[in-house]
Structures are given as C-alpha cells and as structure tokens.
Length: 367
Length: 238
Image (cartoon, one colour):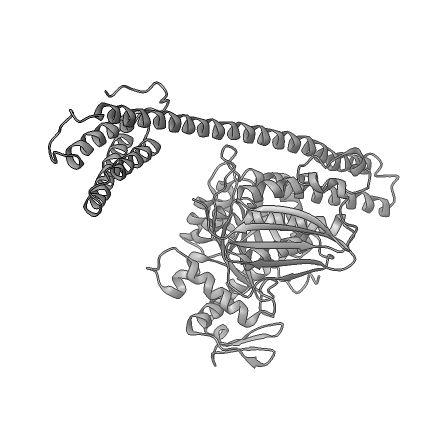
C-alpha cells in the first residue's frame, strides 16, 4: 500500500514522517470524537458521520505529504464507520448493502484530494523558485548599474587630482602662489569627494552578497541620527540642518554604520543637489511597527520623469552629468540597497517647494 | 594657533605609510611638538622605551606586529597616552584597542584639527593623573553646563538638574574623562561593577534619560556625543 509517490521530489525525512503520522492520527481521532457526538445526539442520520470522516480525509490529504496518509486515512475511516457506527455495532461487517460503493468513493476522494494538494505544493515551490531567479537577475542588474556608475564617478576626481598635482609639479616655477593654492584646493576637494564615494562603496561590503542581509543590533535612533549629523557637519560644515526625533526612546535593529551612511547621503543630496534655500529638515517619526526618517528640502525638486528611477543607479545619464552636479546616482542606489537589506522602504516625492526622501525601518526584526 | 604655549612635548608616531608619516610630522612640528617617527612596531617599542615620549600615535595596521600586541606590551611598563589611528569600517577593532589600554582613537582620514585636539586632551589627562586629588575639586564647565563634583550639583543655565544616582555617576564619569572616548565595557564596569552582563541596553537607556535632561535637542547633542559601536565622549571641559 505504501507506494512511494513519484510526485514527491523532496526526500522524506524521518521528522516529516513522524509529523505526518501524528497529524493523521490526530485528525482521525478528532473526527471520531465528533462522529461519536453526532451519533449520540441523532443516531438515525449516519450521513453526517460519513461527512465528518470525509472532511477528515480532505484535511489529512491537504496537510500531509504525498498520497500515503490520505489513502491510509480513508481505509481507517471506512473500517471505523463500519465498526463503530453501523449495525451491528463494534463488529466489522462488510456484507452490508452498498458498502463496497462507500469504500470505493472514500478511497477515490482521498486519492483525488491528495493528487490535487501535491500539485498545489509543487506549483507553490515552482513559484518560489521563479521568484528567486527574478531576484537574482535584479541583484545582478543592480550590481552592473553600480559598477557602471562607480567607474565613471571614480575616474572624474582621480583625473582632477592627477591633473592638478601634475600641473603643480611641472610648472612650479612659473605659477603664482595663488594659482598653486587653487590647484591644491582642487586636489583637496576631489579627494574628499573620492573619500565619500569610497566610504559608500565600503558600506556595501557590509552587506552579505548572497543573502543581501546584514548583521543588525539594537541601536538607539537618536544616537544614530546625532552621529550621522556630526559626520555630515564635519564634511559640509556650512549646510544648515534642523533635526527632530521622537520624545520616545527608540531602539531599532539595524546596522548603525549603514543607516548613518543613508542619512548622510540623503542630507548631502538635499543640500548639494537641490539648491535648497531653507535649512534641510531631518525628522524621525514612529508608530508601533516602524520608524520613519524624513529628509525634506526646499529646493528645485526632482524631475518627475526621474522619480521612478532615481534609486536605480541608472539616473546617471548624459544630461544629468551635464547639469554641473556630480553623480548622486551611486549614493542613492546604495541607500536603496541598504534599506532593502533592512527590510525597509525608501521613496522620494516632490512637495510644493522641493522634495522629500523618506525611508522606514521595521521596529521588530524579521525572523 | 599659538606655538609657544605648548612646551616641547615629545610625540612618537608609529606608522608604516610614508606619506602619512610625513604629513603628520610636518603638522606637529609646526605646532611646536617634538616628533619622532617609527615605521615598524619593533622600532616603535624600542623608541618608546629609550625616549619616553609624552604621547604615542599608533597606526593599527603595521606590517610586522599586531597593533593590539603593541598596546599590551606598552601597558606592561608605561601609562603614556596611546592614541590609536585606525581605518573607519571596523568599530570592533577600535573598541578592542581601547579596552586593551589605548587612551583614544582617531579615524582615518582625520583633519589636523581633530588630531591636535586629541593630542591636547591626552596630554591634559596624563598630567592630571599626577595630581588627581586636586583635579577632583575642579568643576566641569562647558557652554551652559556646570558639574560641581564636591557639592554633587549639576546645573544647566544656572538651573539645578535633577539626576538619579546612576545618572549622576554616569555623567561625572564622562565629565572627569571629558574629551576622551569611554567604551561601553569601561562604563558598564565602572557604574554597575565587574560582574555586569555585556548587554549595554541599560546604559543606553540611562544615557537617553540624561540626554533628555541636559540636551536641548537629543538628536543634536552639545555635551555628550555617541560613538556608535564604541561608547560615549563628553565635550571637553573649558
């Protein structure tokens, strides 16, 4: 009877066998108990009892693997109905009229349901598989985009540094002091920019490349915000930022270094690329499930055509490079990667006089 | 900056990268310090034994020795302030170096202003250690915050701030070491004793409460700064 189903791809481990056996027994026991109840209340109507057992069969087939348990349960049910609930009671009597038909139908039901549920499980597995493939493709695309913008973005400051220093060395006699100072200033500017980029790239290495997951620990939101702000002020001391955090003391699972990087990138984006007149606003709000960080500026806003792709790292296009701003593409795509790894969400919207970036972090870590 | 007020303190720089050695030496010389450099850990240990510098700047990524070992060896015979120079990405390494006995750290790349501030703080703390009892009496003062250790009174803009016992102990610990970063482990042991478990949530909750009492905006603190993954640093006393 225990034919190994050809449909079963997964190897049956002993744990699964034990679980399924126990489950089958439990369902049958419950069914028998209910049937007894019925039998005592309305002894005449035995159709109810059959229905109870059929329900038990369907459930067994649905929640166990393969055909075996369903078929076994159907055999037990048929015998149990015969033994317990038909005259003569507590005796097996297969000579009752129509009994072979009952037997055949219960068997048939359980086989059909088993086949259906096995198919269902297979389809679900295939779906998960396909989703994984899609995700892999997505990751690959992200990586390719990143590489593309990185190589462009790295080459530019390096060209500046090499060019300026070469000019200085080659022409040191003919240059005035002021010109020399200008050259060195440019070198410093480009190096700082390079450093920022390298820091962004380094932060990505903290994300596990296979699972796209990170090692989180409980961190206090206000501490992370304050440190991010301090680091930002060190880099761009002249930018005005107002900051507000909730009165509640919030501990949220995260990789603090990475979240700081996100905050810094968003602040820099708001300060440098929007041409904001008023101070940039950094506010944090929370509800039971998540913490929401807002970075709001009062600048030129984002081209609506680019809103959808702004986090893809592909927003580096010939015309965006010619607007005089250095590529924010990689910074924002790194923000997205980091927030995605935290199971959070990041979005950008235009408001009436500027734009607002928002990202969320779940308060409870997902298992 | 005035170069004469700083007497010729000797600084030993142990760093293998020549470019970095040269820029730090130039900066410090310009500030009136006497500077000795070593390119390897072995050389650095020799020089620190023979020349007794006032501060040691130690790069953690040396080719011949593990930085932690250098700190441990130094600590067997000297309490000279050691400032660790480290690359950003790993907080654990910094915390470990501090717990090994380093006094402070500075992250690459750093500005010369930062470096000089760290050196000044370290020099001040090492001179304090020789006359500690007197220093205990000197109140902490920075911006609007004053801590009077002898009266156990903390005031902000002249108003008395009510702190719990633990909060007061925490704040004075940070204030006595102002300008210096204190690790979670160090603070936990000082406040809750050596047998406290290493879950520092209780410390963070207390710090959050202190912040709400003394800082105008907890997200933009003026007195106590967080160094995530490492510990806390209080603004230097005026």
